[in-house]
Length: 292
Image (tube, helix red, strand yellow):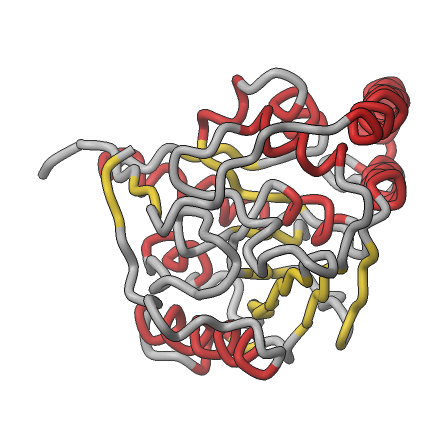
């Protein structure tokens, strides 16, 4: 059996070139950037300070620091001027949420209103800033290697048994936010456990509404786009649009015969959410994938 990492990246049509911020844009960067950094660092510092006491009282559960994470994510969206609109309600029991993946902004949008723990590729742990935050907030890091699949399934089942609500992106890569790629079924094996027959998974559609006059893919982060320039553009924008987070009814895992059937049903629900919101670009919806 091959142990080659499964690292695929979606490559769509490249966005129009951007010449960088103008003078007013740099002024917005000058106050938004430091303020955003301060909010993240303060939230991180408080969480690290409280975590030992929280662990002593509640074990692996994080009833206090998860609220701090939510507050920091709400503050981050407010600093950017990016509005968040919710439809439906996030699930309350333990289990998981799955969503389409369009941008690093997904993390702020999904964390702002629900206490969740993300499942992320292992490389993120080494990213400056974001990697530190991810580790501090209890992110589950995985490697997309077949030889490690069984161990990762056991790790996710252990987190579920502790009552954690996991969030992951089954597409395996981010897109321009105008499509939903086929869901990879591998990680769904963690939920087909006879020890936890009542587990549920909630499909979530994340819809980005571009600022007036901008192209619909404004918030998308895909292909070989670098994080720094994309974040700079978000900080410099004169006016932002909106993120719609659509929480669909949760599905009971036991009602599906296998992980592939479960993945197909969840994919259909997420895609239907984008379609009903008018955000699905059927033209060119076929995935264009390449090894990263």
